[in-house]
Length: 192
Image (cartoon, rainbow, N blue to C red; front, side, top):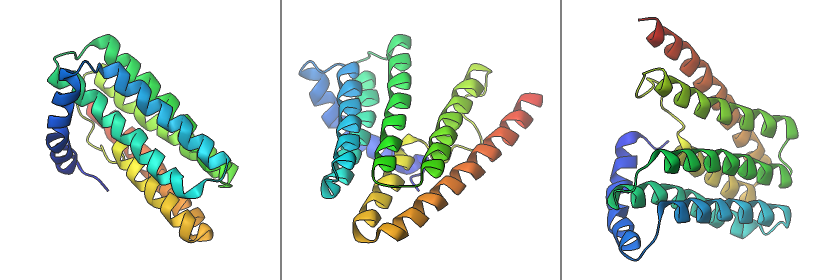
């Protein structure tokens, strides 16, 4: 799993690219919408069974998700409206990505559960921040973590589809545990 130190390192590595894009007129919302477009293309490729391309487009969706925040920071264009747009589009992107897994033949109930848990996890973080908890104690499976794990599952699907179904189930169980821990620790932190 990708932890916060690794996330920071990746952000630092990509900072020159963020500066380059900002210097040439790229806006954070451009990156947000490009990333969302790649999510839609991923789902289409999954539906059309272009298996070899699915991991590439999923990673591109995640890559542009990282870039939108970077472009906002380096160009001093961090704004409440931008944060709201990014958050909403990310949730739509999550739904579209899970739809892609359904199109590939993953169990409908497990895909529905993974989608619901992902939306609950992101909502819980936003709600805790709104209530004054800047960073939840349990901050595993952030969006970049999920994209990397799901890309690994896609690669596994290409090699051995039954093994990938088991991996997706394990992923969903992990999401269940993390959401439960977030619920408990968030409640305890707010009672202090």
